[in-house]
Image (tube, rainbow over all chains, first blue to last red; front, side, top):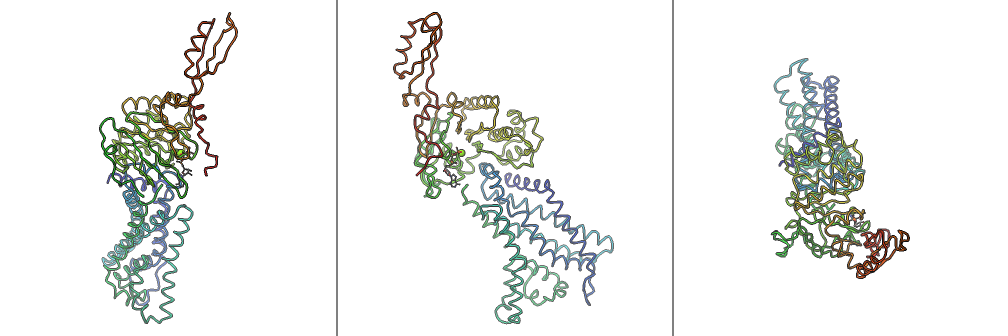
Length: 273
Length: 303
Ligand SMILES: Nc1ncnc2c1ncn2[C@@H]1O[C@H](COP(=O)(O)OP(=O)(O)OP(=O)(O)O)[C@@H](O)[C@H]1O
Ligand SMILES: [Mg+2]
């Protein structure tokens, strides 16, 4: 446990030193603030509070940005150390490889949670100072932050898996970019295309909730929609949202953290130096 | 294939005094078709300093990685301090890799504190260690700003964390200036005196011949020789060079004789009868013995 904490502490210190924490936090705060003030939003007949509007726009834009930030933080953690030469010394210490992976995850997960909570929190604080939101709005906001942290963690786990899979840092970068493109952009486009082609009928329409949970970004979207019926109505997806219990979407996201992490740990343990 | 977890004979498992600190038996490591180590059998006694020599690519670093359990043997058994390599076993081992690298942004003190935590060593011992390797003044500077020799010294300091019973040093003196080398070997002498076992690889034969208890020469993954310096001299049977000054009387004249080791004393006695002013005896150096044993270079065809 001491070793895990030591490794986590080192990752946190390094992310702080190279201003990673600062820039990620600022980026997320700016995104949230921009959405809060630009987004009087096409709310139509729904009389939504300003925080709620922000939450809904954040949920739809965070889906692109959070995975990107998480992957950037994590994609080279093992392969980068191997290339740099520090990995040999680290592994010569009395620390198991799964402890190394656990420490790195703990470190990166804390950094990302900090950036998300503080970044989004700053924007919410500014909004609250202008006009105090209703308690339900605060609840929706808290849920969004929690889901966003979960999404970030899932992509950190995926990044760690990438970092043990490839032999070179450059190929890890390429793979991370590809994974982002597929999971965040192409998967949805494909799904949408299939839905339009079939008119939402047939097995694709039936399996839609399951297909959504097979992708961490969509699990996140679904989680947000299931807990915010107002958001679902605005997104026009209340049918799908109603058919999935929030706990299931949350569990899907949790699996997206646990499975890549476990795989990364197993693969790393087998690897020879 | 994987003999790491295989059963060990009793001789390798027990750790009573007198049992080897390191024992490898029939150790083979293949990288694809290439044999980095080829049925190596070797043991190192506690408190002994073993010099590991061999051409580039002979398998020295590979042996250390195997002993640390960082890579798995293709065949053969390994025992380090009485047990097969494992994360827990590394608590009593200090390792200095060749070309040691640290995360450049951290200061020397931060690096050592971090590594001390990994080894569950009292953080208070890091400062004396930094002083010991002459880095106390630079402890607060980022490692990025260190010179090559300073990084090497930090590497040595981390290898000494937690009073290891076994030190594995892979070319530890590269980058060290002459004075630092001397203090480095003094430190090693002190440690072996306290019973620490040292496995050291190097290409600087002159600094090892007087200091190592035993010398192991690897060539293409095979053990070419494993003996004390005296033993190596005996088996090599190389001539001893005797230089006699003043052989012509009145302090003039000089004779250089290369005689077989057995004939050394006889020749000396004969010379002493003459009007000598000085006499030098040069036994074969490790370098000549190394060349004589036919240790190939890394460039040679290895097929
Ligand atoms: N990870 C690896 N993958 C493939 N081959 C390897 C690997 N590590 C070492 N080798 C090969 O094993 C052989 C032994 O390498 P090793 O690093 O042990 O040599 P060495 O004796 O330490 O040489 P040097 O004096 O140059 O440090 C070399 O032929 C090398 O190419
Ligand atoms: Mg080497």
